[in-house]
Length: 396
Image 1: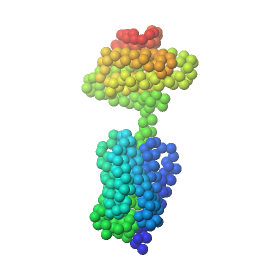
Image 2: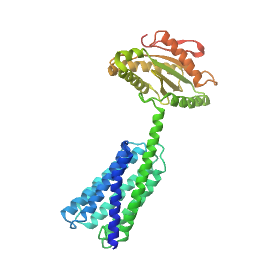
Image 3: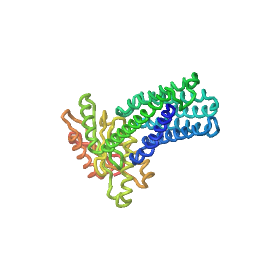
């Protein structure tokens, strides 16, 4: 009866995994890469457990048992690799899991070669699966690059329990084989493994769902701050960041400048090249701002074909140099990427006194921009203390 209980627990766990493998993609709908990796990980582990249970229906040690068991080990450990890559993405890192992947290959190859020795294959597979989980736990314990929720600790606890049980199974199978001669036998370690695997698998899925929810919330927050076409900050997000940078500029008495930019003859671009050409021009201009910007500079699509740049710790000469870099970049790339030249007019406003606000600076930059457009476009002007200074760069 006890043997049946253990087999039933393993069978129930496989049924639960199968349901989750089918239900998660259906209910989660369209998801990003991290969630797809997690879904693939669960699916692979489900296939692995199905094959492992299937192998037990054949004669022990026969070729069918050997083949199905080896493939099942590869699927289970491969599923962990996909889960590890998902966790890396949810931590704000690249989807790299070299150590878990190497352990998965080593474990599967070793298990296949040493299958004829029961003590070896049980110790080898359980020991390396425990090592694989330990590598994932180590990665989860490192500081994430993005804010993550409490799912991180739930996952660490679940994986730690599974790792400890696997270590016990490895030791018993390798060194105390007489006390652990059968995977489905009525042994305490099998009962503990079956029960813990059932509960920890369910909790791990809860952690994965929470991780996916956190990432979705971060993505919504990110999208709420960005312009959908250019990927630049939108006006609202830029103004919030600009107020913070202005406060820091006042606190540390560092220079601060606003550069307001407007693409020249943008209506003509739309008329001649269509709205797709106009969209491409806006995207290329945003790429220009990214390419020439310094660390700490903030730029946004202020509206239509108008952009604003906040330059931290930048004096007037630094902003002039920034403007020159922009014009050089456009001269080198616009024709190549768009098929036509792209120029802009600009207005500069510096922080002049402690009572200055971002709105004051924007108003002065807008006056300077209007003067630049009135003077023939293709240039950048500044109005410090309402005295016009010109930087004639590019063509009118």
